[in-house]
Amino acid sequence: MITKLIVRGMLVGLLAGLLAGVFAYTVGEPRVDRAIALEEAAAASSSHAEEAAEPAHSHEEEELVSRDGQRLGLFLALGLYGVALGGLFALVYAGVRGRVGPRSEPLLAISLAAASFVAIVLVPFVKYPANPPAVGDPETINQRTVLYLVAVVIGILAVGAAAAAYRYVSSAEAWPRWVAGGAALLVPVAAAWILLPRIDEVPEGFPAGLLWDFRLASLGTQAVFWLGVGALFAFAARRRSPA
Image 1 (tube, rainbow, N blue to C red):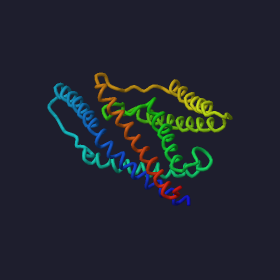
Image 2: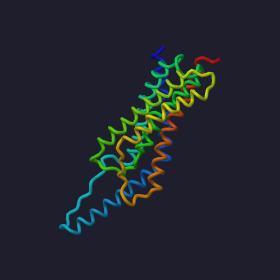
Image 3: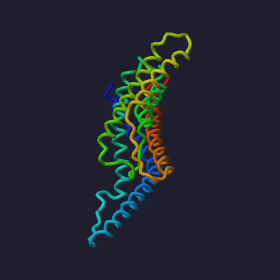
Image 4: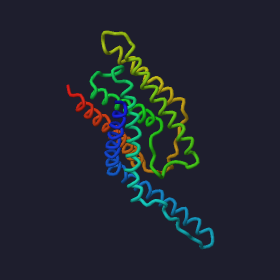
């Protein structure tokens, strides 16, 4: 049973990843192209300045991967990402089914996907939003990766705490449970937002509109992915046990 559930999750994750890839290709890639153009223009300007100060000697660096190859890699990466997270999603779904959340399996799948989006995507995004290729110091990539993973862990713990608080508050009415769950979510997230170091490597003069368009496209890609996971998993659960 659990094996079939994991396989289902992996297939759902693959489809959701490909849907997210379509969104990223149509909405995000034009922003990436603009950011790369800005980066290349800045590099060309710097190179011309160096050539003016040194004897004539020039060489061009070839791209390791062409832009077409990168676009194809986008679908491959999101597909593999979807397979991995889809399998993990199925394991968590199996663990909480009948214990936490709605009794309806389709509604549980949608609720779990929404909680995953908040924990894995939205909480880290608030502190460390995605940046386009022209933004970021290569020397700080390890620090940024570690801090982002810390934010993901905090998001998962915060969502877990919110679910536990909602479940264990004794009240005949729903609003005290919602208040307790909201507080359990927001307190650790706010503390992390204050205590974790701030990283701001956006170069001066970088177009603010392009930066936020890219960030919203990145967030939208993740939203499409988790919406796809929730909807497809719910559809599969409903077909398996119609009631």
